[in-house]
Length: 383
Image 1 (cartoon, rainbow, N blue to C red):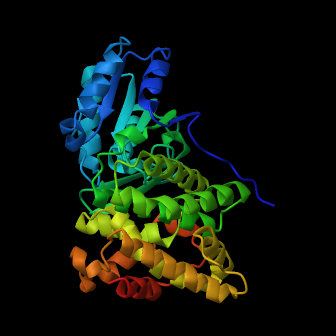
Image 2: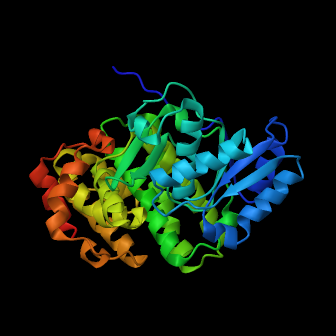
Image 3: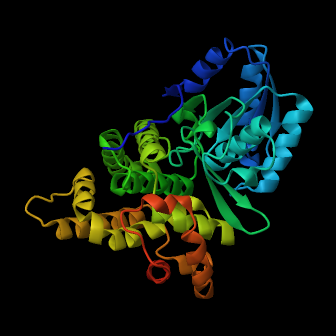
């Protein structure tokens, strides 16, 4: 038997009013100056300024770095790190979805360990914990606020680097559904399908265990029951709240069971074409699981049941097929594009994309290891 280690932040605040509670807790932390890592839309919505003012009432200064791109880059990390050092910040707060969280992790990791963010690509390459990071989430999908995963695009190679490191786990995660109600429908859909991908890949992962299985299956059920409503009516706080829990559970699952070839392939699309991660995952998910069904049909049948399908009396092969059909139907219902062609992906790039995907650490726990030709075939099927 192998041992399993479970990673997540030591403090996790979730529910309406979570931000206020988090700020109150930070007032007892001894921190004096935060670097708030966010993006310009959240500054325009007023969220960053409101957080800055709330911290000021607790005698905590805050400087705002809002130059994070949708797919954060090595340059974003370097610019944020320069501001952190200039202002003498003693901790970092990320405010947003996966992009600000990942950028903040990169900044905090290099702040403590030195060097360049490229030095930490791979698994557990750092020597010591990052500068303390508090991750405040505004989307229900990436779960980056609780994970040891940090995805940064190398501007020189256009490859998304997967940094999987226990030292980038935030010290506190904050999920307040009140911050999520202004998300547009397309972002709600993409991040929700991202969460589903996390749960599915964690459940079929070769590193899955009873804890991650429980988290993944519950996340799948909550997403199946609430994503369509959250997309249809963003002001439905019951659906928003359930999606916040769902994405957190999915994050708990993949943070510890890891992922698979959906993410290994999606990372290449995002880095190469600067495409939205959740949309790439959603398009690739059924195609990768169709490939995986040769080795994981029983597990895919479990997922079908978690999605509310009646699988009684079906063979595992039939159950897996029902699961894949349900994933495709959900993606269509929430408006995910049907294929990669509509995103500007080019068939002539498949060979390069496949080669890079096979080097991605996320693929190591896929239930079936594909050949280069099989990865190309999956890209072609998703085209």
